[in-house]
Length: 276
Image 1 (spheres, rainbow, N blue to C red):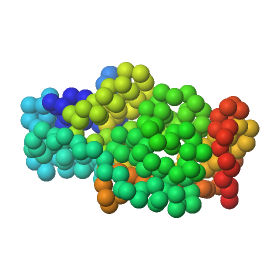
Image 2: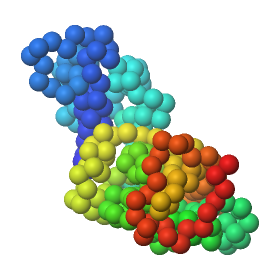
Image 3: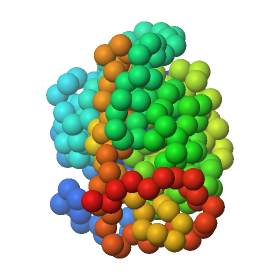
């Protein structure tokens, strides 16, 4: 994470993801760069190549909203990524220290009342509280577990999630969205530094600079020798502390093309949830 040039790093990462044919340009036979060239982005956005170069190199960190809108269009940013770009370009003081989470006193009662696996996580994806249905369903939902670390570094967790790479990519985008421009947060630096060193997949995904809240998504939990359980994830912010998320796994019907788990050790203690 280059806190000194977050804007330039983001622009460069997103530029490399847009292909010439995506914006109506010929690829040609001599192209050696990934994605678009700087001068192509500048021309499509209606700014000079010299000015765009200053933006990427961190020599100009406060472009106008008009320039940012043009760059967002050329780089094909969605709503959340465009908002992230605007945040990077706004003048701001150093990030204030992140306060500790304020888990509501009745959080456990709320979780125990929900008739489906449910748990509460912070912005770093640490599980702070969970109900019995969640802890029986997956070790990744137990209090004290960091879900993003488990997805990238724990083989058992990966075996338990047939779609773990897709799930991991979504979680990286959520982590970047939740951290926003607070990349000098010490806890974030520690987590991202560890994952960057230990996981090449995490490095690749983090360097993409994808941004997404992931409010609703589908996922699967494997069972030994049987079809996986399918769930719809619903994520809700807590009023007591908007940095905390309530995550609920709603049972769904699993598609037939998802293979069963091949290890009898995966989720051997998981109680069955209805598949219809």
